[in-house]
Length: 250
Image (cartoon, rainbow, N blue to C red; front, side):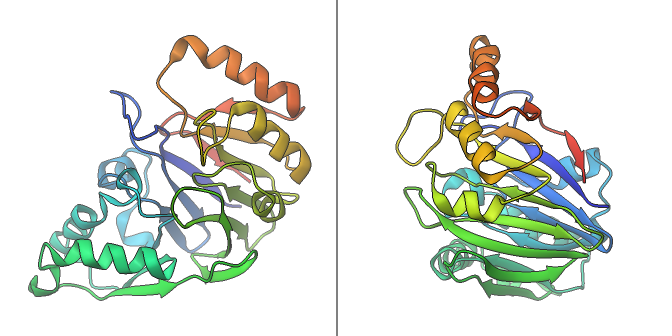
């Protein structure tokens, strides 16, 4: 059994009850965090994930609402006296930019800092990321304004979940999500490099997934019912708007 927990579901415009889109995926031997637009420590505590079980951080792309929390997150882990190395996975360009950002804080001079390991993911459909926390993780490049990766998580006991990251509708997401129990897909709307709820439904249908959860959607509650209707018109399985703190088991 594995769990996917939504730590945040907002676009780059957070609200009082929704932070930047981020998620945690838990396997039998720990969990990984995907994207870090803000320090996720309090969100992890709220959903009951013990920080000592953190096995890695995955970054989809270098936009502020997805990476701005990396430095404060590492600082918190350091202050909590973490000793175990922390791998950070992402595209070579993204890791280079994140390391440039971290250098502004002179983080390598923090006394007793634990090892942080950059792990490059190649921009290929089905690229192997890692076998970590009881999860087999693969990736695919998607269609956004910056180089971006989507991720697939396969549990040791069977089943899979996929996350589109920020992207326009594209074939790599269909391939990566093929047959998954759960697809978490962005639904920003009709903007370049993004996806509408209806298009997310079409991707879910083509990929043959069991369930669709929409995230990274704008803060316009008056449109929520219509967006769900549009997605459900294209995909006949369960569809929901993700909320911060939602937990999905597969």
